[in-house]
Amino acid sequence: MAGATALVMLASLCWGLSGGIGGILMADGWDAFVVSFYRGAIGLVFVLGWLAIRPGNSGLANRKLWFWSAIAGLGVAGNFSFYFLSISEGSVAVAATLMYCAPVFVYLLSFALKLESPTPLKWAAIVMVMVGIVLLTRIYDVNAGGVTALGVGAGLLAGLSYAIFIFGFKYAAPHGTPQAILTIAFTALVIILGAFGDSSEIAIALSTPDWPLFVTLGILGAGLSFIFYIIGLNHTAPAVASIVAMVEPVTASLFGVVVLEETLVALQIVGMALILATVTALSVFSGPPAAALPEPEGAGDGEQAD
Image 1: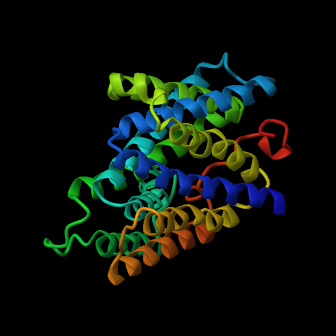
Image 2: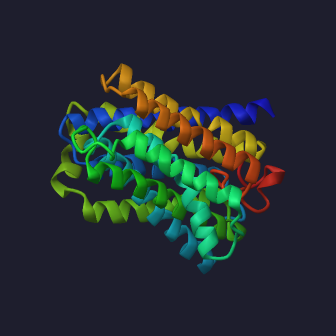
């Protein structure tokens, strides 16, 4: 369905813009954990509304739903936080591209858990992504500057955290609806980041001139985007969704270059292209579990997620 694919594309566009908005907020001095907290907290308001509209068969009485959804919440909390930390220590373009490596981590976790059989093609793709990371981050040039070791590590941890979210969502899906899973996951995120964030900054953020940016970040980065993505994914082939998902790092990179005046050298652009092309091909030709999000059980009939 063209409409479903458009929803996936719109969600990816929102996520790409959220990286740039987060970059502006951190340039204004806001802590990465505080920015991540409000992205998740405002997202929680939206998924609570979704759950209120579609409360049927939520599965909220199921303990397994709570456990796996909490794991998903830990993953999304790490994803948001490490992503913004990577932006603050480097650039939006680098952080977004490193986070796009998440399917590679999904495969590595799948290999470790024996959910997926390693093949020479998959290992070759992983090596290609690693080469792309070296070019993108310029770790071969000690005098390059711009992207710190912390920024590179945080970007990769953002991808790993997203992989954890994928697995948590995957195992929670048979036990409840997507809106129930996201409600628990975002609640866990708010609790975790509320504990790690600067409480004084959290308390005053929405009373400062930057409050419209915080609200916009929450609406685009979590509130509408996750809802659009999951509904759209129910009627979009994983291969198509994987290609469309490239909108996120491309949008984030363009935002960084055009709005935040970030720069990329030629080899970094080559590295970025190598990562995006390899990860997309890996997702398209290998199918699950490299797809960006698993389809919830029973959601294919459109009743749980719509």
